[in-house]
Image 1 (cartoon, one colour):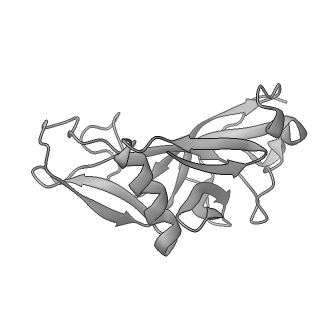
Image 2 (cartoon, rainbow, N blue to C red; image 1 turned 90 degrees about the vertical axis):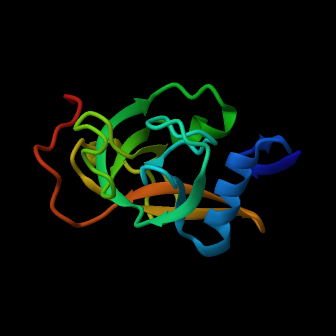
Length: 168
């Protein structure tokens, strides 16, 4: 069982969880966001799984993606359940729609990844800066020689569509 420490907590990936073990190892190896792509239909998926959710094929390969996209949705955590996040509150957890595979296989299904929204220094992005439509890019926080945690940070690029945030 692999275990790394993040914010005072042990992140444990069981030995038999090859999907996540490979995902985090590939992130650390080359600081690229790697996702599984179906060899039959070509669609990528997240979270990593053995079977394609669209065509049910069990044939897949790891494929690099740009790690760029926009905030599709988000949640602001005001009460941290995990002690390691108490000093971070409030902090944003974002659902990022990646630039790759947008609108495919349907306009409502696209390639989306959940992660923390952080500054380049790996601190929580201040809540007033968080909004749906803002552009982001992936950043990697190295936690062990074979483990990097992909997270997202804002870019200076123009937003995607209408920008919306929770009323303050």
